[in-house]
Length: 323
Image (cartoon, rainbow, N blue to C red; front, side):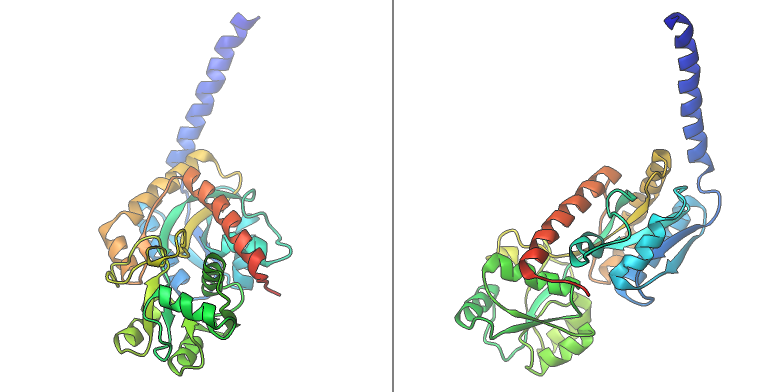
């Protein structure tokens, strides 16, 4: 019996392999929609469009950006989770994909089970900066002042659950200080109050305050990423300034709906890696204060899980929530 089945199984396996190869060759068969769950004009939108242009060139089909903002990315992410898993709908995600599970009591999707990771695209560090009226010229001096004045200092962010909010919460947790969080409607408004001395600490993107730093209106103490930035090469990281293990860079990447065929995910990943490694892409991303990066789908999947766990602990300790 097995002697008769073996040739049949061989034919089935060969047919399956051929089908997979044909699927890879046929993909993409039409324009690809990439959902960006953020408003037009922001950093995530701009980065998503840069990635979309690169994928268009690499895949030979137009990648159309579909902005679906709302609820810290939840609305657009839910739309992508429910899209057909044929590789023609993608999702451009940010760090919120890993923090939303802890910030919201309930999500309409599972951030791990409902998606097939394609790969990382970039990391964007923040600055740890203070108002010039605060006599802190290093991270260690800021920690000393904050410990001597518990709950007297405040740090501003662009809202509850924002990257700046969580960067500050991580700093508080790892250093044991109590710098009070004050949410604003935008980083621009928070920066105005910092310059005016009404706020002591802020965690903005490099490009949003670089001119103020150069003018002496904002004092940058450190950068929140694991390595220094080419835009401010003389600025140390928070970790090397005496807070080991600190890293709070914003990351972006591409996901596909769960059940997207592996051969399609691999094709997408190859195109994504080619895009992020191109000189043009690196230069455009660097001008925004970010670093182009890449990964395998498997590494990105593991990274997302680790980020969910990391920020889950920080959010629980800080009590941060989005209503």
